[in-house]
Amino acid sequence: MTQQPDLVRGAVDENGVYSNSFGRNAKPLHSDILIKNGLLSEIGQHDILPKQSLTAQNYLITDSVCDDLFADEVMISFAAAGVKVTKLVVQSVSDESNESSTEPVKTREVFNQLTDEILAKGITKHSCIISLGGGVVNNMCGLLAATLYRGIPLIHITTTTMGAFDAAIDFKQAVNHPLGKNLLGAYYPASKIVIDPEAFRPLSSRHSLNGIAEALKHGLAQSQQLVDVIVKPIVKQGKAVLRDPDYLTSVCRECVETKVPTLTWYDESDFNEMVPQYGHAIGHAIEHLSWHPAECDQDDMTTLAPLLHGEAVAVGMAISAEVSFLMGLCDEKCVAEHYSTLEAVGLPAYVPANMSIQAIIEKMGYDKHHVGVPSMGLCAAIGKMAKSSETSYCWKVDISTVEDALRRNIAKREELASPPETPSTLSMFDLDASREHIMAGGAMAGSAWYGCACSS
Image 1: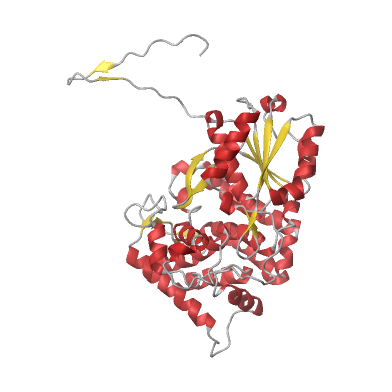
Image 2: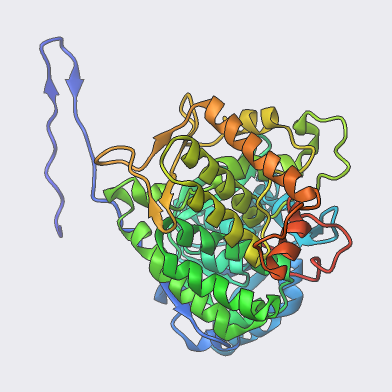
């Protein structure tokens, strides 16, 4: 429309109430994904930023670990292209296991500090927020871009497997609340999502597997082929393959091609919502409790250590398989395949010791899909979700069923903690992976599992 619009007249009903309405077609959510080894060092050579942002004041936000590893080459590349970028750094911290993480600073307080600093330095509606980091930085920057001036341009440069396989490849942006994970957020698209698999090299095995868990989620729920692409090289070559850019590129591409349909047709079926949430209803509760042990309702919390997001989701998927079996939706083979798949790659599959069932159930009440009772997607088989009706994949689950599933999971953990009476059918790699995660759900202080890592 190039002229002044006509007035829109309202109406008065038989009760004398005047009414009118307004609306407009929403701007479509759209993101372009770019994947290439070495892309970080040449980022200024590509059309990464929106055209209007090239002459605006832009902000690159990173964490202290990624600042040391990547920020200089990215800033130099932007400067060479004549793009004005100011860098802001969020401090990474070490958890009880001496593993770096930005999860503890994914808070309203840090979010507010960043908004204050950006507004004080000055922005326009064309200023772009550029995230450089893992899932936490990606999520926080997404919420910044969504809320500053009611929405300014956003670019994700993700440097972890968690960002590449999950957080950055989505419209969901969020920060945590003291009562639960990702309770404050918005749906907002990054115009470009940049993935350089070579940036994953500094990650410890633990942080690499953190993102692998989210890729496995799509495999277990959608695609046996994706499961094979992820698992077979790890079983054959060991964890060294987690630093192979070619392996990571193949996993990333397969994961993107599996995940993109759930984002593109998100509103067409709740299948596209239940798949990304697979394992999360329970996993979010376990993750939150691992970072807040005082809420675990246990006297002895000495063995409880923080879990990364993917680790908690891995446990959540194993328990979800137990739920599915108890509801008659899948067979024991599907449940066993969940455990063997997670254990084969070295991910936790069991509720951490000293985390009570009651604490998990109570914390699940803060999940956004919890309406009276837990609601979740469940698998019928590996790579296939179970339908709850002709048009839905969302299952409402009785609390008692979740409790029974948790008990089954804990019983298996205790069984593995005892020496087997008969030879196991697991490979030696599987056995090593299993034992690493039995007692602490993957948080093994002092082992080689921990190493320098970019936060995710």
